[in-house]
Length: 168
Image 1 (spheres, rainbow, N blue to C red):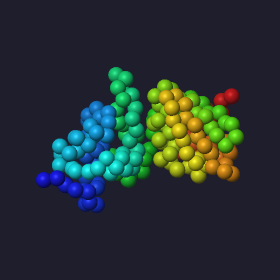
Image 2: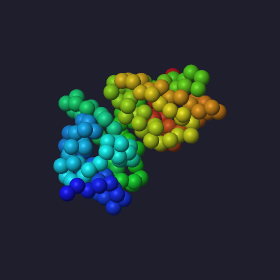
Image 3: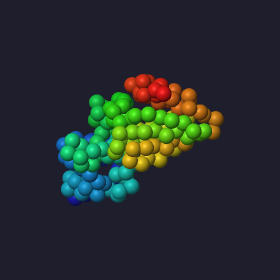
Image 4: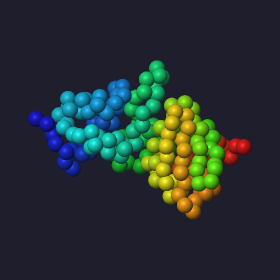
């Protein structure tokens, strides 16, 4: 018997997603959906996408170079728990340069999606949106916000970026 989406199993499903991601190499939503269905959960890909966003799951290369889903490190595994500073934002962030209302962030190759996702998840007042490539992120700043406002937003959430933001 399959469990259908309800508020009652919402927490249990997200807890199971967290456990699966911690214990197994999961590289796609289809793979994760299959694992959840084998445990009795019947859900749509849209529901899974919302769960992954809420859990702040990102796709990162592992030690062997395979891309897999990863959770921010040093966080409470309970959905909705306050999130600690994602380690990947500090490790992969190289520099930022500004032009008008845009920022270009340079990253270690393959880290840009994780960093852009972290920026988007924080919903900075200065940021209208991000676009990530392999090692570059374009950040569009909202009208009325400039480079200093974006730097302040970043430093308020990621104080470890101070040296990288003040280079050059």
